[in-house]
Image (cartoon, rainbow, N blue to C red; front, side, top):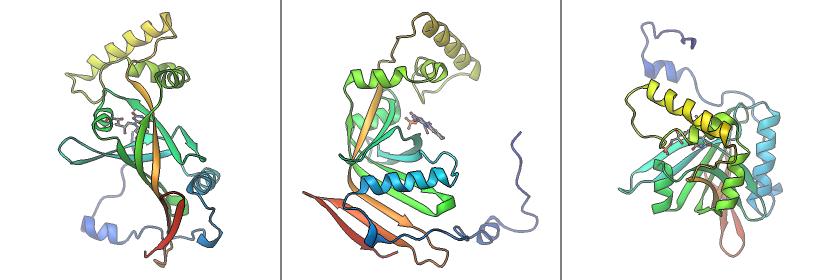
Length: 227
Ligand SMILES: Cc1cc2nc3c(=O)[nH]c(=O)nc-3n(C[C@H](O)[C@H](O)[C@H](O)COP(=O)(O)O)c2cc1C
């Protein structure tokens, strides 16, 4: 059972939200003058800070893509690794899913992290590359049996008649994988978002937020942004 929040009483949703200003707590500072020349090491520092602060699912981000009609789409997913040298953020998904099809047609994306306990946001934009099939296959085989079975349980995000239909597919996939543990889902792909811009945003309860944007040309250029 999910615990329900207190009711609205005679209030309104707008009133309820007004009483809850975001980041109304002590937050760490951020001195952009101390920031490294490239964004990868600073991202890892902030990620480790979020993990140390106990932020749940600190490795989860919003991946934004654009569909064939130019309409933005977004969903959460897990960060798999960071290539600090090459400014690459790695994630995984299936080519036969809406996000996979969108990335095939338009391999550009954004990843957005938010770590509430620290009031920190990181926005990464760039081009998306697909790993070689053997790299994606090796990553697939590191996954839990449940995660692998899910990938063999029909196309992600396709409509289904009932939950029982998926349960049957999932159980059949578990049995199939138990018999052949080396099976790899054909569409499973490790993607790398190669950053062209990375913005670090440190929130402040008094709204004096600090924003540092790295932009890639031949080298990385840094600029402060108005909050
Ligand atoms: C915390 C969390 C982590 C997730 N991690 C992944 C992931 O690593 N890969 C993935 O394909 N979907 C992941 N999902 C599910 C996606 O948000 C999404 O529902 C799914 O990928 C289908 O998206 P699409 O229809 O845009 O392709 C995650 C969802 C949540 C809430």
